[in-house]
Image 1 (spheres, rainbow, N blue to C red):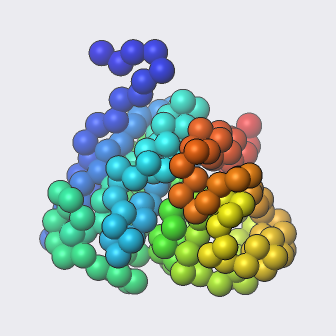
Image 2: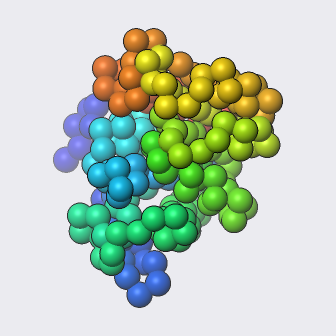
Length: 210
């Protein structure tokens, strides 16, 4: 039984080549669905990362379908841990599943930390990305964001100096996207998780056009 204030995620299997990744999915009627890319295996990330769980919860409370997963070689996902193109292959497989499950043409993609690089590459290769949300992005150059359009959302902590704030602001502004700076927070955003969730839920609503 699902109580008030809770949401139900079900196990999901994501085929990629001859291997299978594990994930958890939530059903919903709102569009677009949300795919959450966890931090990279190199960063020690997985689908149970606190930000990933918070984003899934926030999207679910807005009735959006969600999918979060473990890259190959992480926890119960089969295969060896990869990087670069291997992570893109994993994310594309997960995108296929979330679109099929929701019977939707496009999905919002939220990427945590180093998976920002993966998200950019997925968008370049697949037309089913409605918009990108990059949370505490790493491993990218701000100038890469300039062509991503108003569907871009970047969320960073005020104390996160990973990327030049000035360059990041200029790039997001040039794209027509939104930069949200969380006051007093670092890269992990631990004390501001509900705020981050609300921001991402509002972004999904904008993507839906409602």
